[in-house]
Image 1 (cartoon, helix red, strand yellow):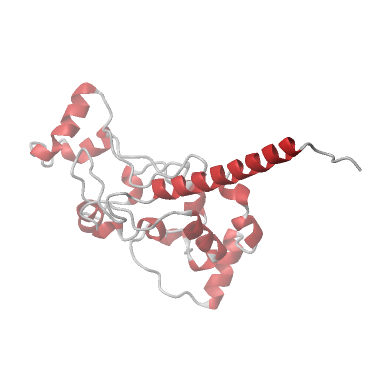
Image 2 (image 1 turned 90 degrees about the vertical axis):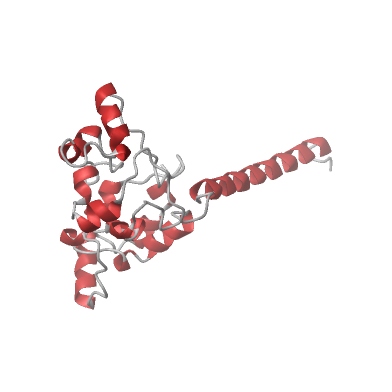
Length: 216
Protein backbone atom coordinates (compact mmCIF):
# COMPACT_ATOMS: atom_id res chain seq x y z
CA UNK A 1 0.00 0.00 0.00
CA UNK A 2 1.49 3.39 -0.99
CA UNK A 3 2.45 5.85 1.78
CA UNK A 4 -0.33 8.40 2.39
CA UNK A 5 2.03 11.34 2.89
CA UNK A 6 5.36 12.15 1.32
CA UNK A 7 8.30 11.96 3.77
CA UNK A 8 9.01 15.65 3.16
CA UNK A 9 5.44 16.53 4.19
CA UNK A 10 5.75 14.47 7.37
CA UNK A 11 9.06 16.10 8.26
CA UNK A 12 7.67 19.59 7.60
CA UNK A 13 4.64 18.87 9.79
CA UNK A 14 6.84 17.65 12.66
CA UNK A 15 9.04 20.74 12.41
CA UNK A 16 6.00 23.03 12.46
CA UNK A 17 4.65 21.28 15.56
CA UNK A 18 8.01 21.61 17.31
CA UNK A 19 8.22 25.29 16.32
CA UNK A 20 4.72 25.91 17.68
CA UNK A 21 5.60 24.25 21.01
CA UNK A 22 8.79 26.28 21.28
CA UNK A 23 6.78 29.42 20.56
CA UNK A 24 4.27 28.67 23.31
CA UNK A 25 7.03 28.00 25.85
CA UNK A 26 8.78 31.22 24.82
CA UNK A 27 5.60 33.27 25.31
CA UNK A 28 5.08 31.77 28.78
CA UNK A 29 8.67 32.47 29.81
CA UNK A 30 8.51 36.03 28.49
CA UNK A 31 5.27 36.61 30.40
CA UNK A 32 6.85 35.34 33.60
CA UNK A 33 9.89 37.55 33.01
CA UNK A 34 7.71 40.60 32.41
CA UNK A 35 5.54 40.00 35.48
CA UNK A 36 8.52 39.59 37.80
CA UNK A 37 10.25 42.86 38.77
CA UNK A 38 13.74 42.81 37.34
CA UNK A 39 15.44 44.96 40.00
CA UNK A 40 14.51 42.54 42.77
CA UNK A 41 11.13 40.94 43.31
CA UNK A 42 10.05 43.49 45.88
CA UNK A 43 12.01 46.54 44.77
CA UNK A 44 10.31 49.93 45.06
CA UNK A 45 9.30 51.59 41.79
CA UNK A 46 10.67 55.06 41.05
CA UNK A 47 7.89 57.62 40.58
CA UNK A 48 7.95 61.20 39.23
CA UNK A 49 6.87 62.40 42.69
CA UNK A 50 8.18 60.79 45.88
CA UNK A 51 4.85 59.45 47.13
CA UNK A 52 4.37 57.59 50.40
CA UNK A 53 1.33 55.37 50.91
CA UNK A 54 2.45 54.99 54.51
CA UNK A 55 2.00 58.72 55.06
CA UNK A 56 -1.17 59.23 53.04
CA UNK A 57 -2.97 55.99 53.98
CA UNK A 58 -1.37 54.85 57.23
CA UNK A 59 -0.78 58.22 58.93
CA UNK A 60 -3.35 60.56 57.34
CA UNK A 61 -5.98 57.86 56.79
CA UNK A 62 -6.91 58.53 53.17
CA UNK A 63 -9.31 55.98 51.67
CA UNK A 64 -8.02 54.11 48.59
CA UNK A 65 -10.97 55.43 46.58
CA UNK A 66 -9.97 59.05 47.09
CA UNK A 67 -7.06 58.69 44.65
CA UNK A 68 -8.05 55.52 42.79
CA UNK A 69 -11.45 56.83 41.80
CA UNK A 70 -12.54 54.10 39.36
CA UNK A 71 -11.54 51.06 41.43
CA UNK A 72 -15.18 50.13 42.13
CA UNK A 73 -16.52 50.60 38.62
CA UNK A 74 -13.90 49.70 36.02
CA UNK A 75 -11.07 47.32 35.24
CA UNK A 76 -8.45 50.01 35.91
CA UNK A 77 -8.34 51.46 39.42
CA UNK A 78 -7.26 54.88 38.16
CA UNK A 79 -4.24 56.95 39.13
CA UNK A 80 -4.36 60.19 41.13
CA UNK A 81 -4.79 63.19 38.86
CA UNK A 82 -3.08 66.53 39.31
CA UNK A 83 -6.38 68.01 40.48
CA UNK A 84 -6.81 65.33 43.17
CA UNK A 85 -3.33 65.99 44.53
CA UNK A 86 -3.94 69.74 44.51
CA UNK A 87 -7.03 69.45 46.69
CA UNK A 88 -4.52 69.19 49.53
CA UNK A 89 -1.23 70.35 48.10
CA UNK A 90 -2.41 73.68 46.75
CA UNK A 91 -2.10 74.64 50.43
CA UNK A 92 -0.14 71.93 52.23
CA UNK A 93 3.62 71.76 51.54
CA UNK A 94 2.99 73.64 48.31
CA UNK A 95 6.57 74.98 48.20
CA UNK A 96 8.22 71.62 48.91
CA UNK A 97 10.81 70.82 46.20
CA UNK A 98 9.50 67.25 45.83
CA UNK A 99 6.16 68.65 44.69
CA UNK A 100 7.68 70.66 41.83
CA UNK A 101 6.51 68.04 39.24
CA UNK A 102 2.95 68.42 40.56
CA UNK A 103 2.91 72.19 40.05
CA UNK A 104 4.62 71.79 36.68
CA UNK A 105 1.82 69.42 35.67
CA UNK A 106 -0.80 71.94 36.79
CA UNK A 107 0.90 74.75 34.85
CA UNK A 108 1.36 72.76 31.63
CA UNK A 109 -1.83 70.69 31.72
CA UNK A 110 0.25 67.56 31.13
CA UNK A 111 -0.80 64.63 33.39
CA UNK A 112 1.63 63.24 35.94
CA UNK A 113 3.40 60.24 34.38
CA UNK A 114 3.00 57.74 37.21
CA UNK A 115 4.81 54.43 36.74
CA UNK A 116 2.60 51.38 37.19
CA UNK A 117 3.76 49.00 39.91
CA UNK A 118 1.51 46.15 38.74
CA UNK A 119 1.47 45.72 34.96
CA UNK A 120 -0.07 42.48 33.70
CA UNK A 121 0.54 41.17 30.16
CA UNK A 122 -2.04 42.20 27.56
CA UNK A 123 -3.30 38.61 27.23
CA UNK A 124 -4.40 38.53 30.89
CA UNK A 125 -7.71 40.23 31.68
CA UNK A 126 -8.12 41.70 35.15
CA UNK A 127 -10.88 43.89 36.55
CA UNK A 128 -10.58 45.76 39.83
CA UNK A 129 -14.35 46.30 39.88
CA UNK A 130 -15.15 42.58 39.77
CA UNK A 131 -12.72 41.75 42.57
CA UNK A 132 -13.91 44.61 44.79
CA UNK A 133 -17.56 43.65 44.27
CA UNK A 134 -16.70 40.05 45.24
CA UNK A 135 -15.13 41.05 48.54
CA UNK A 136 -11.44 40.79 47.61
CA UNK A 137 -9.58 43.25 49.84
CA UNK A 138 -6.88 45.55 48.51
CA UNK A 139 -4.30 43.93 50.78
CA UNK A 140 -4.84 40.52 49.09
CA UNK A 141 -2.86 41.69 46.04
CA UNK A 142 -1.19 44.90 47.18
CA UNK A 143 -0.20 43.91 50.70
CA UNK A 144 -0.07 46.36 53.59
CA UNK A 145 0.18 49.37 51.33
CA UNK A 146 -0.41 51.57 54.39
CA UNK A 147 3.02 50.51 55.67
CA UNK A 148 4.97 51.23 52.47
CA UNK A 149 6.94 54.51 52.39
CA UNK A 150 7.67 53.64 48.74
CA UNK A 151 5.29 51.47 46.76
CA UNK A 152 6.46 48.02 45.77
CA UNK A 153 4.91 44.78 44.60
CA UNK A 154 3.92 42.27 47.24
CA UNK A 155 2.67 39.37 45.09
CA UNK A 156 4.06 37.83 41.88
CA UNK A 157 0.66 38.00 40.12
CA UNK A 158 1.67 35.12 37.87
CA UNK A 159 -0.80 32.54 36.59
CA UNK A 160 -0.11 29.99 39.32
CA UNK A 161 -0.65 32.61 42.04
CA UNK A 162 -3.97 33.75 40.55
CA UNK A 163 -5.26 30.20 40.06
CA UNK A 164 -4.37 29.33 43.65
CA UNK A 165 -6.48 32.26 44.84
CA UNK A 166 -9.38 31.44 42.53
CA UNK A 167 -9.28 27.78 43.59
CA UNK A 168 -9.65 28.76 47.25
CA UNK A 169 -11.67 31.94 46.76
CA UNK A 170 -13.59 31.65 50.03
CA UNK A 171 -10.30 32.06 51.92
CA UNK A 172 -9.57 35.38 50.22
CA UNK A 173 -12.82 37.33 50.53
CA UNK A 174 -14.44 39.42 53.22
CA UNK A 175 -17.66 41.46 53.68
CA UNK A 176 -17.92 44.40 51.27
CA UNK A 177 -17.61 46.89 54.11
CA UNK A 178 -14.17 45.49 54.92
CA UNK A 179 -12.64 45.51 51.42
CA UNK A 180 -10.73 48.79 51.84
CA UNK A 181 -9.54 48.16 55.39
CA UNK A 182 -5.79 47.72 55.79
CA UNK A 183 -6.01 44.99 58.41
CA UNK A 184 -6.22 41.20 58.35
CA UNK A 185 -9.71 39.85 58.98
CA UNK A 186 -8.39 36.79 60.76
CA UNK A 187 -10.04 33.38 60.46
CA UNK A 188 -13.75 33.56 59.63
CA UNK A 189 -16.28 31.19 61.16
CA UNK A 190 -17.72 28.39 58.97
CA UNK A 191 -21.05 30.23 59.04
CA UNK A 192 -19.44 33.44 57.75
CA UNK A 193 -17.59 31.53 55.01
CA UNK A 194 -20.83 29.84 53.91
CA UNK A 195 -22.62 33.19 53.79
CA UNK A 196 -19.85 34.81 51.73
CA UNK A 197 -19.83 31.84 49.34
CA UNK A 198 -23.56 32.33 48.85
CA UNK A 199 -23.32 36.12 48.55
CA UNK A 200 -20.49 36.10 45.99
CA UNK A 201 -21.53 32.90 44.16
CA UNK A 202 -18.20 31.18 44.82
CA UNK A 203 -19.55 27.63 44.65
CA UNK A 204 -18.80 27.30 40.94
CA UNK A 205 -15.11 26.39 41.07
CA UNK A 206 -15.02 25.55 37.36
CA UNK A 207 -16.07 29.06 36.36
CA UNK A 208 -13.47 30.65 38.62
CA UNK A 209 -10.64 28.61 37.10
CA UNK A 210 -11.86 28.47 33.50
CA UNK A 211 -9.33 29.78 30.96
CA UNK A 212 -11.83 32.28 29.54
CA UNK A 213 -12.18 33.99 32.92
CA UNK A 214 -8.78 35.64 32.55
CA UNK A 215 -7.99 35.11 28.85
CA UNK A 216 -10.57 36.73 26.58
